[in-house]
Amino acid sequence: MKCLRIIVVMIGWSMTVWSMDMKRELDLNGSWRFEIGDDPVYATNLFDDSEWEMIRVPGRWEDQGFPGYDGYAWYRTTFLLSAQLRDKTLFIHLGRIDDVDRVYLNGHLINGEGRFPPDFESAYTVDRWYYLPSSYLNSEGANLIAVQVYDDFLEGGIISGSIGIYSTRHQPDLLADLTGFWKFKTGDNLGWADDNFKDADWDSILVPILWEFQGYEDYDGYAWYRKKIIIKNEWQRETLILALGKIDDMDEVYFNGQRIGSTGRFPVHDANPNNVFWLYERFYTIPSSLVRWSGENTIAVRVYDIWIDGGIYEGPIGLMTRESYQKYDPAKQNRIFDFLKSVFFPE
Image (tube, rainbow, N blue to C red):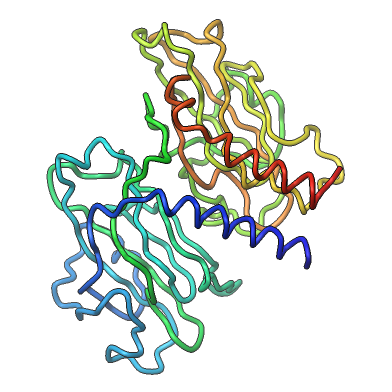
C-alpha cells in the first residue's frame, strides 16, 4: 500500500507539471448533446443526435433533470479545426468523469479511464487528458467528440474541469505520426522480430491505447506489436529517433529485425510489480545503417505486462529528428522518476 501511495503521488506530480504547459485553444464548456442508455452507433458521425437533450458540461447529470440515474450515458459535441491549429499537437481535456469513460474522435476510439461492468473499476478521481491523433482529425469540417460514460452510484457524468481542446509545447515535432492501427499478438516468440515475418493473420489494435480496452481484458504477460513504415529518402541527413510514448510495463524494440533498445530487463524473471517503467516515455535512436530509404521498414515491439493494465498506452508515437528530441527534453521528467525509483524501489 505504501508503494501504491508513492506511485499515485508521482503520477499526480507529473500530471500537474505537465498540464501547466497546456494552452486552451478551444473552449468546450457549455451545452453538449446528451442521452442516457447505450448504443455503439452513438460514437459514429453518421448518427443523428438532433433529438437528444442538451446538458451543461461540466456538471452532474443528476442536477440537470436526471436525478438518481446510474448506468450508461453518452455526450456528443463538435468543433472546427482552424488553420492555426492544424500543425499543432492537440489534446482534449475532459476533467473529472464519474465513473468510467471511453472517448471517440470522428468515430475512432482514442482513449478512456476505468473499466465497465462486469469488472467495474471507477476512475472518478482521474483528470482526463487525451491525445487527438492528427490522422483522425478533419481539417475541412466539423470534428465529432463522443463520450461514453458509465456511472455506478451517486453523482454521474462529466463532473468538473476546464473542458476544451488544448495545445502543448511539451510534445515533439514528428516527421511521421505513427498513431493508429498496429499488428498485435499475445505470447512471445523472438522470431516475430524478423522484418520478413508474415503477420497478416495478427489482430490490429490502436496505438496508443491499453490493450485491455481492445479485447484483451485482464491479460498479463508477453505481447508483440508490429508496424510497416516508409522512411523518406529526404531524411537521410537526419538522425532518426523512434518515439513510442509510455508502455506498461517493459519493452524491447526491433527495427528491421535488429534490436535497437529496451526499457526494463529481458528475459523477465520474477518481475517486480512495484516498478515504475510504465511512467517513462520511450525514445530509441534508429541506426541509419538499418534504414531502407524510400522503402518499407518494420518496427517490432516486444512488451511484457506484469499486472493490471498493459501495452503502448500514451503518446507521442512517431518518427522525429534528434534536434526535435533535444528541444523536447523528455529526459528531464524521466530523471525525476529515476531518482524516485532509486529512493523507493532500490534494487
